[in-house]
Image 1: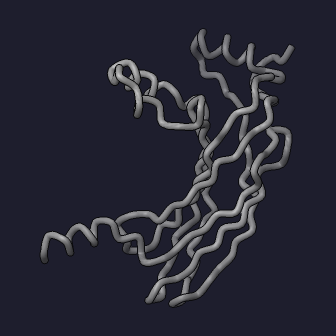
Image 2 (image 1 turned 120 degrees about the horizontal axis):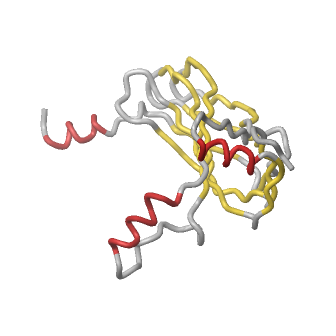
Length: 176
């Protein structure tokens, strides 16, 4: 096997295409984020094992911090501590996809805002404070979906940038 053949196999996503349609904004008070995922088959029939969603907050300014900065060490610290929210959701498969077949999935990605404090003192304090409603400025989030294909080494993904309202109800504390 040649060098380029090996590289091609390493990045094999199963020959499918994936598209995500999501609203431009969502509310934490809603039932979830309604989405439409379109998966298009390639040259051969494939099995998509699941649709894997990820919702995470974006750094202030919506970009990758540190790319244009002169102080890279300081920005590495900023990058590692920036993500304050990350949520995962899986729509279980498998889904058979014929050659050139197009399948559309209309789903609601649930929004989970529950904080379950652990047994530590710090967690108990955080739980007590977080029970209730938090108000903050509207923020940008990235909603991604991936479609793992049986036998493929990599996962084809796509994402959309969406804005959330500036209010979140959090359960798990005393809620004053």
